[in-house]
Length: 388
Ligand SMILES: Cc1cc2nc3c(=O)[nH]c(=O)nc-3n(C[C@H](O)[C@H](O)[C@H](O)COP(=O)(O)OP(=O)(O)OC[C@H]3O[C@@H](n4cnc5c(N)ncnc54)[C@H](O)[C@@H]3O)c2cc1C
Image (cartoon, rainbow, N blue to C red):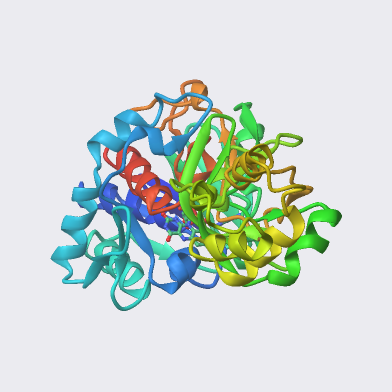
């Protein structure tokens, strides 16, 4: 059985659905082929189930890519305000949590249902549980599944990255790119918890669950947000953000008391200089257990001004050399991917393979934590959808 369309979209996640909606609205006959038993599984688990669907402060600087300019055009032509207009049209209640991050008040399901409804009104054909066996190109593109063949002059690859394989992530998009001779930047886990060395694990990981407001920095980038100690290392927004910039064997530097001088109190010469006093000061800035552990492990060798200055310096620059990351199983995003040199920044179409498009996370554009990855998926999806 052969089914013909104007465009085939592989992957029914954030980018694929947005692309289908934009193309369908313009009268194109589009089909979304999704291998999972339902659309948008990642949308449903995103933002702790509330989907941080965009960020109102979205800027090109919030993205990593080997070409810092590539995402600008798509992001400028489909903005957070555009997505918000859609959310408001569907009367979905939302709130700003922090730092411009917009979340659903109720559930991520609201966003998925909105996209599904938009697909219905744009007359998009949706096929779930569809296992793609082969993709070929002659006059147009042909996609063969177990019991049908789909043909179209345009093929959009929106199959996402490698993060969270247990909900359906595959290397399909990269494999397809290679099949057509398209360059790939080696994918790596981004926005991922870090694993500490055995020595640091034995020092800190019994404090699993403790979190603190810190500045984490690496490779000239820094993020001030919460850090969380885990059973194997460090996580929390500050660590996830900085993990995207970390490459082995670089160190990560953590300021445990941003913007304050812990030992300032000892300028008062009447103040006793001892572990109890320094612990008391640190407890004002850190959870008690972490403050106590820090002092226990780094008690100044003497109580001279020089020793106190060393303690102060180290408290603002805890140097960690992670043993690794928790990998794609726990990563919220995938760095690297289809090389942006291969794509038109305006349409996401391959320069060397007309009619073939790559959008969303499969492309070498990775957002910071905070709604930026979805904004990229919406923007790239819209860019391709409007050009089909
Ligand atoms: C736990 C978690 C929480 C997150 N929370 C947020 C958040 O709150 N805000 C934010 O901005 N970003 C968040 N992200 C990142 C965000 O989910 C992704 O960046 C975004 O979903 C990428 O969209 P995409 O359409 O490119 O890929 P996906 O959403 O991954 O969609 C790809 C689709 O392709 C399908 N597919 C894969 N292989 C095949 C194949 N061979 N054949 C057919 N279909 C296939 C998949 O099943 C999937 O439906 C989160 C990620 C994770 C893992």
